[in-house]
Length: 275
Image (cartoon, rainbow, N blue to C red; front, top):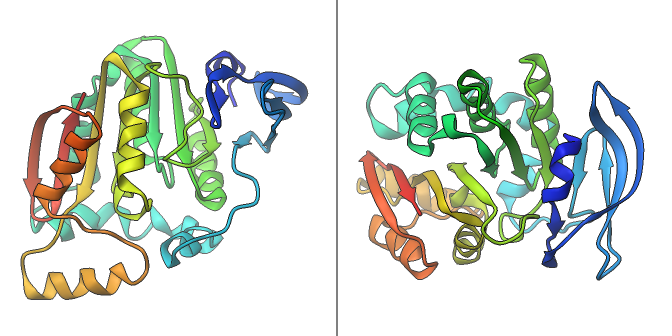
């Protein structure tokens, strides 16, 4: 956890209230490894442990997808197995990670820096790409990865450390992120909209957080049009995943107050630029 990020953190229950530092217990190479933050309004204490800020604590998992994401082996395997080939399989065309990450960072304007948040970050793939571009451009700012799964965040942190990147990781809900209104310059999400549960609440949170000149870039999956694809999605839906139609997805954006500035579809994969 980068100490310079602390003044930007607010209580998820009281987003207008900045968290106060109750105690910093351990710092390594300038990063906070353990400590406690506190909300001065509700007196809730949030722990920083092993460099990850936990804003949830005890939490009941509500879907099979969430249960799987908490399994350390699944977190370890995610980016080593499924993720590098996912978009090529789902879009029915050659779509390597290099192409995807260049698209995401370019559309997000990562070179401008600022506060950039990877929502539902899993292994931190987008977060690392944002930080690489920010560093290369020489821009100031911070990259934050947020996820509900501690196992995913721990794997994301290990990957960031191996690449020498300073990324702060926070365990928080996509429907209640720890930042004040209009303070986030870039929001990105890579496929997590399909498994986060309450989609309208999550998108309303994007509208709340984006700064006036901020930009959101989302990769999400929509309903399949083939019988085989529909059958697979129905099976996955039993585990808590959602696959809205493109029309329903765009309706969610509008209802949340987000403006759709551009959109591209490759098979069931959709990239959307939002403000």
